[in-house]
Length: 375
Ligand code: PEP
Ligand code: MN
Image (cartoon, rainbow, N blue to C red; front, top):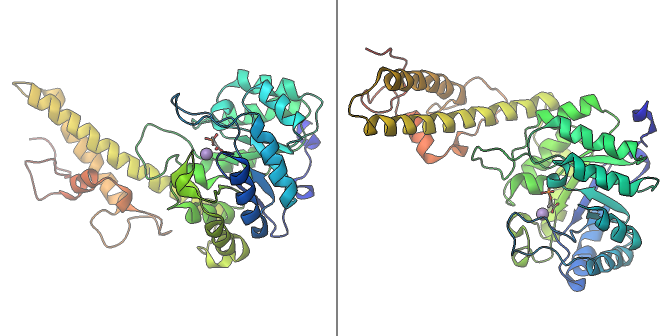
């Protein structure tokens, strides 16, 4: 069985805190920046220093990484702090240059995991080489692609594989940059229990704001560690400035969620708590989608001289569904509806959606959320 060939995570990269903590800047920017950041991070229980060298950016023209010369800066920062170092590889040339520079751990980024051909090319370039590889989930919520990437690396003979949960991009506007969709990493764990899973709250959140609560949720769910972006001057970072923590903030986070996990949210059932978070997020998305649906119907209504039966039926159907969603979200009530886990966050709804859901019963001519049948 292939899975039996995978080394147990407990034998490597595990810190005395019992968790693997990967930290470092989104991008290596200069020799001084990576060394300065590494020196400030080293006393904070970090197990592995990260730094991006080739940055996959959505649009050309933004900072795309310092390229090959940065590998030596990263390795030197690791040597100075006695930390192993990791970087992202997207093509075989990155693998070759990283191996030449004695980088200790490689990772495959979310955009690359989305492409089986790109993953296979990396796997082929690693055949016969014993190096740990971290595999981030694909951009889109597709467990099969994530598992497929793990399988491709295994078939190339890589034994030390770690999955990294960095959230998923969907078309729905959300408080997170990438929705956590906890059911996906939890499904990965049940299908491949031997694969350690880290959580990357930085790329899930996109801002510093929710990093502690997502880290807490990940460790509460039993994930094996965290990958967190940290930069010695976060505001001046050349990539992902809003989501990077200063080393001092990182140390505080480790103190709160790793060393003293009991300060976190007490959990009766870790996995089902995170699944309830997914349900809450889906309910919020339903509210947003229904509000958008109603506004398009109102536009159709305004454009037509006569209101068609189809438009009328759709408006009424939207109201009916919205009434149920409103109840699930507990909008306008002192406490959330059905969920007793306390995670329902109706404030995460856009103001427009919240107002629309709240305009219930009292305004029969507006987009009221009632269960009345069409006349
Ligand atoms: C990163 O780690 O800086 C990065 C680009 O991550 P992701 O592939 O998760 O977007
Ligand atoms: Mn980044």
